[in-house]
Image 1 (cartoon, each protein chain N blue to C red):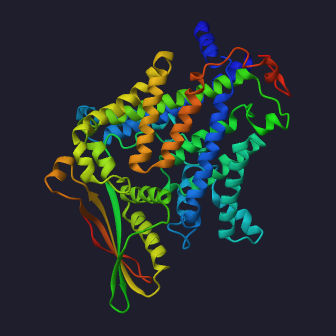
Image 2: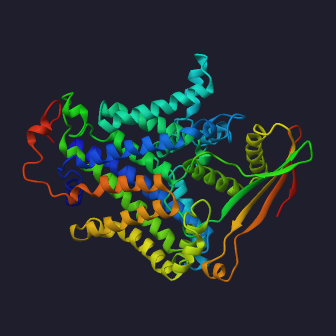
Image 3: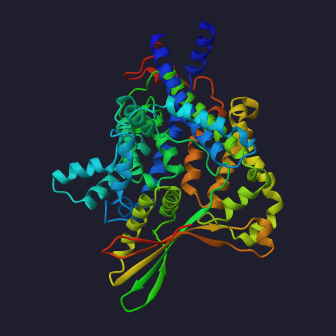
Length: 317
Length: 203
């Protein structure tokens, strides 16, 4: 038992560079910036309270309270703002601006930890208050931001490290935080693939056809798609094979690159052919952060001990 | 060594939650949809779902601090839902159409709209949610809220007939044979500003 536990610890705490954290930080920051910009014109309309928007934010928040009263939401901010005589529209605008600013700080790595926490908080408030409107992209962004917030920030490419002399954290801490993202992605793809594999329509191509032809994912005309109908069963089966195979082939150095390319191509396809650009980009960011830095062979001495211990960073384990 | 074990215990706990939620949602999908598995397994999927639901504390009273805390953590980490997107089947699309009746007798048709493609995907999620609501009162209430958003843009209306339905798209073979998408009405309501909505059609 002790030997097994030691193996788990060795696996989790293997010293590695913080490049994955750089990819995650910059990737998520850009993702949130795009989310803010794409949503700007509909932000207030989608998140306003009863009688002022598309559907009541209060309804989503009431359902949220049924789950737990501790989940962050825009209603908290609206309540605080109302004490100071601020209108709901102003609060929503301020929340959008705070999210945008926090993401800007995050992208350059200035006050990395605070920026990560604020980005997570404001994004979570928006997603949960618009709970009835949320889809997969929102969940994956929350997952990424949560991991970023608790990760050993800052990284070597951040302004904090380069110009504010904030030291790096213990490099061994990079291990478990990156491992949890890697294992989480394996769970995501395995269960996604398993559920698809169980549906007969994913074997005969019907599901793929339906996914590509129904509104609002019908970017390509069905008249064009139908010419490729014989490919649908092959692509449909490939999709769930890639997903189910992810946890088995992504860990081996021999198959990692091939599998990563397959998954990235799948997400690029989802983005281009179904118009789910933000969904595609968040999945690409998470995959690149989790597995891509391993593919870049580290030069000897790249992980300099002196860099690790600068500032308050410690190496003692 | 102690700090390593403590960190790792937290990581393992987190991943076990992710695994349990994923299992629960997969069991739900298997028990509710037509799958390649024999249908006599449906009761087993439901039992497994109950078990995983209990593990997540969802059987506890809503006010229970453990349930509240666990729910808050799951939502904060973004791990409250599984990952069976478009699975086991790609769900049908829901469509909402407003028939706007004006005081001067004009009739116009409109669908709920947003300005950006990104917000459009959120709107689809909302319609999916409404389509899955089983409680008639809740569904009607949500549709009325959507109607009210339209009413604010068209003040001179006397009544709005709301038609909520599914869009049935043909398979590739049916499409080749000339069949095109069809609209199946699920619910229809006449909504006026003063009184409550009157259901005029139910399947």
